[in-house]
Length: 106
Image (tube, rainbow, N blue to C red; front, side, top):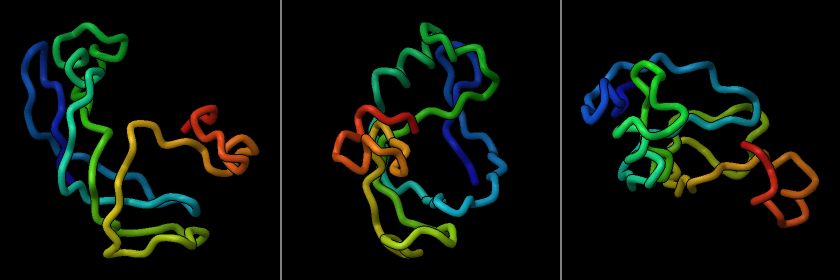
């Protein structure tokens, strides 16, 4: 898969990405449309704490097509179109199950 990444300060470019295996509660999605976030801009400009990571892939808000799901995923299947929010919480935590997903790490 390819991703848009910070090559160096103020320079974006496409890089090849090796994907991890799909875990039991994971989904691998192919982005269809992305929305730049202010954190992406700060990464590209070199103003974010994570800017110095080589080839830092940007973009974490998107619409996407599900490509593969883990064996414990019940609500999505390959081919589904989804919205990937800015923050993806750990849906297996008590706060998320109680409707407070903003308090869960993802």
